[in-house]
Image (tube, rainbow, N blue to C red):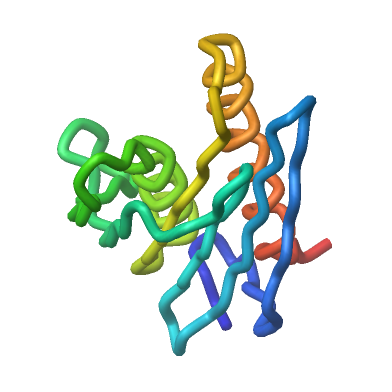
Length: 138
């Protein structure tokens, strides 16, 4: 399946895991026709805490750049929206695809420094997902 810039998206499901200390995050990404669905879970109690939908669109600031618009459904009391939004918007903009992300990461008694680790792991996970989804032509 084609993406922008002549890159090709693999049809297979992709599984990626990242971890540091007590924090572990897993993901599964599936193509659904031309769209992408990503499930992110982790910590002591994986769950569904948030669902995002990002739709690619031309950037409002840069003529030749793709950006995205995101809708968020967040369960009451959950704080997974920032992680889900980051992954969803990043993949939608880079792949020029509609992207749904469901995210639920819960770490018991998480410390402030572990929250920072979680954010860094989400960024690492997103980069690894992008790399695994795109086969660059050589």
